[in-house]
Length: 68
Image 1: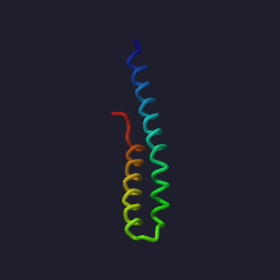
Image 2: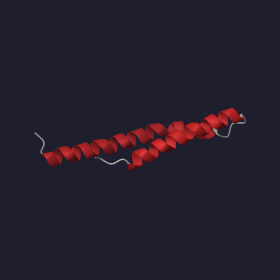
Image 3: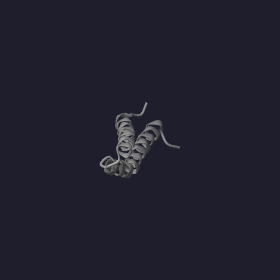
Image 4: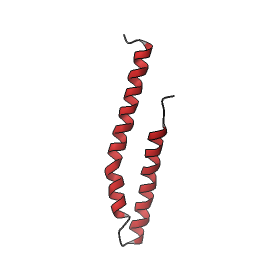
């Protein structure tokens, strides 16, 4: 059975991996939204900016979230 310190270290590593994996999965969406932000249609650009803001907010949250 893992000791409390080992369990805490494992949980910390799991959390770091999860944050890393989530950021990696958000990257293609951010890239696509960035491309769409250059679209000639202003509605498409506005929607792309909404997506970009949401993804950037999520990545900031992932970067700043620490184990409680």
